[in-house]
Length: 93
Picture 1 (cartoon, one colour):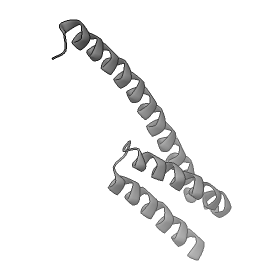
Picture 2: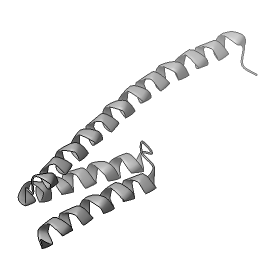
Picture 3: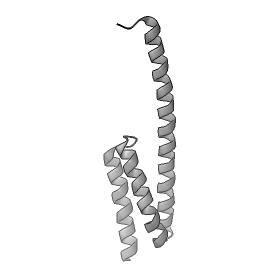
Picture 4: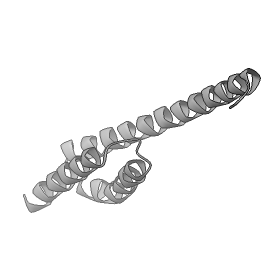
């Protein structure tokens, strides 16, 4: 069994790690929201080339976040599906 001092040290370290992780995850979610907002703006403006170029980067970012469990895998799939569908509809019309 751990002594009281070690338990407190472990708790303090865990708290430091949680703060770092939360900060990083918030930063990544913010980056994702910005990327989604940018590509949606391109789709609204019917900027086909810009949307195609940024789709790959955005999908890569979505996949990376889903693999690290920052967002749920179903959420990632939904984002990718909706973006690719909107791009396909825009390119067909």
